[in-house]
Image (tube, rainbow, N blue to C red; front, side):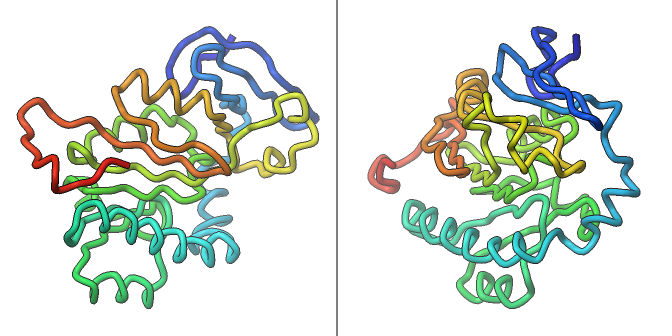
Length: 226
């Protein structure tokens, strides 16, 4: 029995075994995860993704982030401050955001390991195609919870496990750097456990909102309901 790396519960069981890795399922949060003994060492991951990831993911990051920012700005009605976590936006898109008056910090453990970026609070956090790489996702979840302002948004793009019975044929699991495989129930659990509002969890896109703090006063007319 393995401890779930997200909810840290021991209610897990072997889910799938292939020639290279074993995968386990958590009955509490629903996540499937690879056995920790088969995780790639940091140096191998650095060599594989040290330039920011695959070109396909990098091309998709910019429109994803710009669209997200447009939606959040429409709610806030003003400039926002965000964190792009796990990948680095291309310089031109970054300049475009700054010219619009927004502030975007970036953190990537390999290409932009800036500790100062993890010392502030943000109106939103973007986590694009990196959740599957989290070896201990409970750490990132605690980090996101700390970095988000009350009413802040967490946007995650990751492949969600939708057909458990076909896991053996799912190509997404074949990448040895992919170790965490959430499903919709995973984010429902996180929302219920932390008091977040799960706004959307379909088509590999998850949008959550952190609850207001008890001392936070917000004008109900300043932000329309989602």
